[in-house]
Each structure stands twice: as structure tokens, then as C-alpha cells.
Image (cartoon, rainbow, N blue to C red; front, side, top):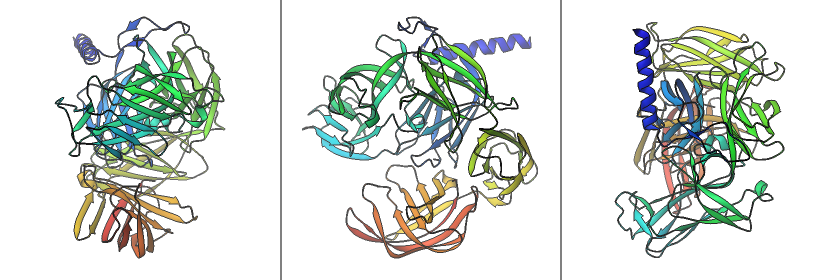
Length: 598
């Protein structure tokens, strides 16, 4: 009876998935010389999913709403930008994750789900106003790299109501360079696409532009039916030699995360220029026939390498096709071009290539099996143990932060148990630093030194108790109080870096995450212990186009110094700064307690 019940449940879940995902389609094994014509149904799978959401400085973002495709299951990132789904409804070919946070462009990730705990990373780009246009007369808005948005006269409507709009149009835009090393964290969806004939292809990008229009009060705007806007996009320097004279244009379908072919662009110099009749993220790409490649990464002890960064590109070229992370079982699935010799690379957290080999060409969906990464080039450390509260009971909603040889691993856990595996950059360090957090009680442990044994380090029971995990950044500016706290899902993070002058710096980033609220950064120079230090940057409005300038003496006093990730910087500050636009002088005082996250 139990088996019958389970079978019925699986059947119902599959039917529900097919109904919700009816827009998605997948190709079967195909001849790479001819675009595939057979469309098959999704392949649903129930699996765990965890991920990290970061900003353009690779710092975590809290309070990001996360949903899995068209499923109604949602969650929110914690203070450290982490999220976790147990028993999520995913798909083996195209699983779709959406990340939403006010003040940022929508983040999307498309990946092939595996049976282990899947891992994704989404980098959100800050939504910045690049210019304004009068809706009646139309006009142009340009970015610093030469990208341009040209809006038609009398061609703008309110997106929801469809009513004509005649006021000022706020234009928000950002260029995405496909040759960037972090393209796999910030590309909308992936490079999976459906061409105009409905065939699944993989794209070779020559530049992307995300554009959003809004009224002065935030109403979403679009292009009026029968009108077009013109987009001018620069061709990346490394791609100019191979860029064709005309190229198909594609927009990302925000319901599926897949790119859709629509129109074309013409090359003029080192720019592509094309017309669009609606705004989304637009991409200039050459499509190529595709297939699915799967693999499993193991270390020399035949243990899976979890959360390893995998990249697939064309040998000797800037063109990247696939990127992502292995699951908890070392498994990964990627959409790749058919009939191509490709370069498979595995990278450690320090972005060093620790393993590389040429693969292919492949003419059909292929599982290349187990790849054993040589022990001379990498080591996998697995940390296992339990998080308990002050009473010794399992922590149901918690996090663990592990720092080993300068590399940080962050993981959610369930029912008090954690099992974190990651590639490290070195195996010569004897101890790791561990901090655990109980998100329900907002308490955490002190930093614990844990002796490391390879390949498995048993941490045992760790108490999330004794220390508050709540951070804050409070300041008064021109007599007005601003209070940010992680208890309110405001994003606060601190990182230690080396400045251009060679001095150690500490930068605090803060973000209330709501339109019209405060977000920005605060930087202290020559900080290596407690004491009083010069403040070299305070930008409370986040507008990097018009930076502020501290007026000496502007100082901060650190009463607590964070030696490792998981500890807190605590202190106070006071001083004046000069704002360039509009030109004015401001006085501010404040205090802070912010966790070091890098």
C-alpha cells in the first residue's frame, strides 16, 4: 500500500510540474549538423537546492526573495546571502531560479538539476539611473562605454494599464560583457535559448544590455505597440575580430529564464545596432546546436568533490559556453555546443585552474562518467557535525561559516546536522576557523579553532550560543537618524582588503534594500587592530557616479577588530564630508557592529 501511495504522489508531482512548466521544452539526442526538431517533455526531479546571492563586489545580499521557476515555493536569503530549499521541484535539463531585491535588476539562473544538493550562485547588479528622456519628444541615453538607448517620440506607455505616458522617462540600464570572468554568476538564466523555430540552442554572445523604464514615481513603462527603440551595444574587444556583420538578437524570457530569438542587429564599427519593440535584457548572439553533458568529480579517495566550480569553453578562446557548480555528490550537468572540441576546467575558490582537459567532440547527450582530480592539484575537505542551541537541542534554522587557508565555505543545514565539502587552495594549514549561527534566536558561537584532518574533519557538537549575531550600522546625517540592522533583513557586511597604497583597509557595505532608502559604503584606512583610523570613503547614498570626499579630520574608532570571518567590527565615527553633486558639506556621526564576511 505504501509503494502505491508513493507512486501516486510521484505521478501527481510530475503532472503538476508539466502543467506549471508547459512553456519549457527540451531537445533529444540530435545530429549536430541539423537543428533538432523533436521536442520532449521536462524531466522532473525532487532534490535539494542551496545557493548564494552576492553583489558586484562579491559581498552577500540579505533579504533577497528566491523562488524556484514557476513553483510557488519561495524563501529569502539570510544575512549572509544564503538560501536553501529541501525537496524542491526541479528539472534535470532546465531548472529555473529567480532572485528579486528592490534596487537590483532581477537575477535568474538556469541549470540542470542533479540528485544531490544542487548549488547555484547569483550575482545581482545594482539598478542605476543612467539618464532621462521626455516621453513626448523621445531621445537618447548613453552609457560610459558607448552603449545607447534611443526611445521613440510619443511611443511610451504604462506597462500594466497600457495608457499613454507623456512625462519624464527614467532609464535604467547596464551592459553585460560576455568575456568577463564572472559571466556565469551574472548572466540572466544561462546561454540556453530557443530559436525562432523552437529549437533548443546554445548561444555565443557578443554583448548584452539590460534596460528598464519607469516614471518618476516608479511606474513601470514599456514601448507602445507599433513603435521601436534602438539599442546600440559595444562589441567586446576580444570578440571584435570574429564579430559578423549581422547577428540575431535575443531577449530573456522572464517566465522560463531561456533566451528567445527576435530580430537582428547590424554591425557599425565596433558596435551592434538593432531595433526592439519591448524592453528586457537583450543579447547579440550566434546560435549553435546543443546537447547535454554530465559528469561526476571525485578526489583521489573516490569521494565526491562538492561545490566545485566547473567551466567549459573553447580552447584558446575567450568564448565560454557553460559554467556552474557540482552538487553534494560531485555531479554536474551542462548544456554545451555539439561537435566541438571543448576545454573542461575545474577551479578552486582562489580561481586557480586545478584541473583541465580537452573533451569532445560530442554528437549526442553524453555522460563522461567519473573524473578523478589528481591529489597533487587539489584537496577536498569535508566538515561534518551538529549545531545545537544553548539547551543542547538541534538548531533547525542555522548556518555554519568555515574559514580554511583564507577560503570561506558557508552552508545552511537541516535538523542540526551539517556536512560541508569544498576544494581548498592548500592543505598545509593545521586548523580551520568555524562559526555557527542560530537564525531563530539570533545567537552564534564564538570563533572556534578546529584541527583539520583530510578528507573528513568531524567538528562534533557546536553550540550556537553566547554571542549575538545581530549587526547594525546607525548614523545621524544632517540631524536625521538612519538605523540599519540585520534583524530587519538589512544587508550589512564588512571585508578586509589591501588598498592601492598597500595599506590594509576595512570596508562596510550597508543596504536597506527599499526604494529611496540608504545604501552605500564606509571605508577605513590602515586598519590592522583596534584604535582610531582615518575614514577615506563615506557614500551614504550609494551613487558612485558622484562620489563624496571626506574632510579631515574624519575618523573612526574601532573598539573590536575582526581577525577572521564570523567575528565583528565594532566602533563609532564622526566627521564631515563634501558632496560633489549637489555641492554641499555634511556632518555625520554613527556607530556600528558588522560581521566580517570576507
